[in-house]
Image (cartoon, rainbow, N blue to C red):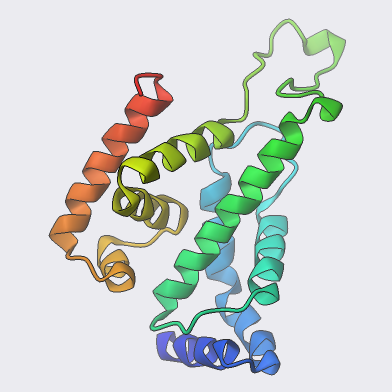
Length: 185
């Protein structure tokens, strides 16, 4: 199956539009799992559901010129990056003043019992951007692992870095993000 995905991805990258029709059902379940992972921890009442996130991300994938993929993990890494961007775009739209900003809409009967939390996606995105300024490699490792759902060995395949280096990058990146999200950076 992995070889079939890689072969189909190579056909897509070569401009074979029919290959996208073959690819979609092959990768759908994995993309849906990625979407569920990306949406975990999002604000209550988030308007994007996993299926909608998969569809929006897939449309963005199809609409751009794709690089040649060496392995399926490259494809999923790009899909994760696009899903993150879709979520960030959604969070920015949600925060826009014309939509009520960060305030959660509740009925008057429940207003006293529900806390109003801002969307964490913008804070996470900001922290990842700051991490990338400090260490592009650490930010990339965090994004591939948490948004892409890639294992350390798969990240090593995508990035060309050793698994020991990646383990250090993930540990340091997690520490940086924890401090940034706690307001220490």
